Structures are given as structure tokens and as C-alpha cells.
Length: 510
View 1 (tube, helix red, strand yellow):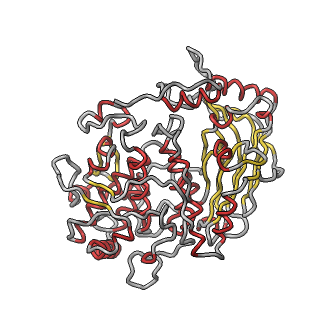
View 2: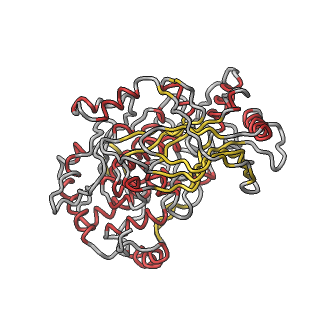
View 3: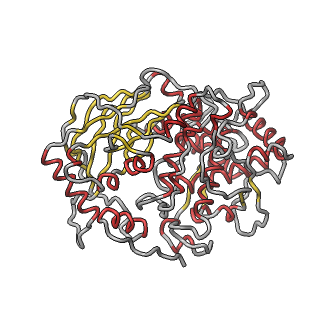
């Protein structure tokens, strides 16, 4: 981390005073002007483009990291307070964009300036203005890759994705974060592969697009987002929206205000959900992206299993137990599978936990295992692996051969330089993936062979050789329920599918 960044303690202390003087208006319903956020290709043809360049240039030149008028201030906000792989990932970043947008207006003197977004589902190659190394170009940063085609997926927008937050099945937020959000960071690489990713201006265009995709998915009725369309009742209608997001000492935002972009006086020029992937390779016939496109359209084969030292079953905590795993998985360009050894007793514990998850009894005794997670522990980036340009799709019990639709049922998430940097930001790097739903669809015979597969996905420029070491890959059972205990349509649909029963009719939101 560069020296101009403040530690969390120093940043909190310095920003306590700065936040009081921050020339960012607090969001309020008295404001009436709605700022229209434009896609970059349109934005760069407007007068706002010059204002944006001017503001970014001035903020980067400001070396006082405690000043909200410096770029470093907003990097520190992300480093010290951003939630990843946890609740409020989308909502926190919505408020973050709003506050920076207000600061851009203040620094530029242009009250019409709104944050642009980069719609990579239409334009998967990084905009040319961000790759021009001209010395006075404030948008340029050294990066590993310039196209994010292989980060794109339509999975978050599938018809069955109805719920929103973590702790529910068919949940949009964790799916969107897993892909395309994380892989976009990974394939661009450079600073985007770190928690200091806001140093790269493309970060904000990326997150503006993520914010746009969230709202596009939620239309027209909010789907399974908890709460209400009434802004004055949202904070009390659902505990989910109670409390505040924190950005710095003295700089917070009520969570319910991040329910809907309009409550922060923002709108987007296009709310179309992606339905097809762009044909990026047409313009670059020699790119490895073309090969990846061809592979994506064909069958996915489970990678060969390698031999790793076995990790014994053991208690991990008062509420978690490892059923077995392997040590020392080193990842390079070759995809690999790891078979996790399960003793007969561990297999029975696994089956019992899945049975409770799918058919929960009226009363669950304390200490009952009722969910399953796959854990990648003691993650360590190796050599050029920290610069990004790649990521891995993580599957559990991927069939030997499966088409893309079938493989989706065994997909757990992604891991790359960005996920590891985030996981190790405040302690030992560990990632865990909810595997209850994927494993619950398997027979008792299939559960005897629990296999975790890591399938490498490359950008057009990617590192060779070993990039990531996983100290331990294991499967754990937990006393925590896999889904929110309150009844939800998404959960009912999944359980009905697993039990081969007709699903309940879809609820109509009031």
C-alpha cells in the first residue's frame, strides 16, 4: 500500500474533523434534482466529460489523504469500511457512489456532473480513454487486462433468482458479487485486484454499472428485497434496513436510503437487463477470448483429480465441524479437482445436516448441524498471481461432463486475486461458499465422493505458473441455517425441487 494511504486508526481520527467540513450534501427527500447517470460512450460526448476529468485530476493531485477533496480519502473509505462477501455489499456501495459523486461536483464546480457507468455487457473492452498513457490523463492506470468478456454471466438474471440478500436461496446479491463483480476486478487486475481498487477510476464506473444492474433486476416491484416502497416506512418495515452504513468517522448514511437510487437523487439512462453476452471476439479473432467463448458454448468437463495430503475431520468451533479435506492445493493454468476424504461417520453427519436443511423439523435442537459450506483456508497469492488477469470458478461435485445449464447447479463462486485480497484484508485469508443447495440434490451414493473443482478462467493477459496456494480445502457442517428462517418463495422453490414436489404459487408483493 502506498504511503499516502492512512491506516484505519489514523484515517478515522483525521476524517472525524474532515467529515464535519465535507462539502457533500446529506441525502434528503427535500432535494428534487435527479442526476442522470450515462453510459460512458454517451457520457464522453457531453460537457460532463471535461468536468469529470478536471475533478479526478484535481483530487489525485491533492496529497492530503484526510481531505474529502483528495482521491486518497475515498480510497481509504473503501479500504477501511467496505463490506465484501457479506450483507449490504450492494447497498453500502450505492451510498459510496453517491458521496463521491457529490464530491466530484464540488471539486469540478459542475452541479450537473453525474457518475458515468461502464456497461460491459455491451462494451466488454475497457474504454480507450482509460488505456491512453498520456502523462496528464487522470484515467490511466497500469492494468493486467483490458477486456472483461470472460467475467460476464447471465446467471444473476435467471428467472428463478427472486430473493435478494444473503441467507436466502436464489439470492441476487451474492450471485452478482460472485460474477460479474469479482471477475471484472480480477481480469482488469493491477490496482483493481486489491482493496485499494478505487485508486483506479474504472472502479467507480464498474460499481455504477453494478448498481444499475441491481436496480434493473429489482424492477418493477422490488422482487424479494425486504422492505417497502415507502421511504418513510422502509427503516421500520424490515429490520434489514435499520441502522446506518459507515464511510468514515462522522460520515454515515441511513441504510433505508440505499434501497432505491431515486432516494439518492440518481437515475440511470438504461435499465435493461442483459439477455445475451457480447460477441467480443469478432473484433479480435486471435484473442484467447475467442477460445473461451467457444468453450463456454460447449460441454464443461470435470478437471482431473490430483493427489493431496488428507486433512482429518475435526471440530473447528463450537458451531462448526470439518468433515475432512486436503492440504496444500497449488493452482496454476491447469484446472484441478480435489477429492475430499469423508469417513463413514462424517458422511452420516453430512447426510443428516442436509436432511435437516431440506426437511427442517418443527423444533431443531441446539447444536444440530443444518447447513454445509466449502472452505478455502490459508489462501496465499504467489508471484504474479497478485496482479490478476485470471480467476477460478469453484464447483462442488461437478458432473464428469455437463452443459453450462447443468453445471450452474454445482457452481459455488469464484476465487482470484481480488477475493483473496479482500478475505485477507483484516486477518488470515479464508473464503467459504454455501454448498447446502448444491449437495442436497445428490443421492447418498454421490455424496460418498465430495469433490471440489477449480476451473481456471483467463483474460487476454494472464500470469503463467503457480498463482495461488490454498492451505486447506475442506467441507464443514454448521449449526447455522442455510437460509433465512422466515418463509420465502425462493426457499420454497428450492426445497420443492429437491423433494420433487410442485412448488407453491408465487407470492404477489403488496
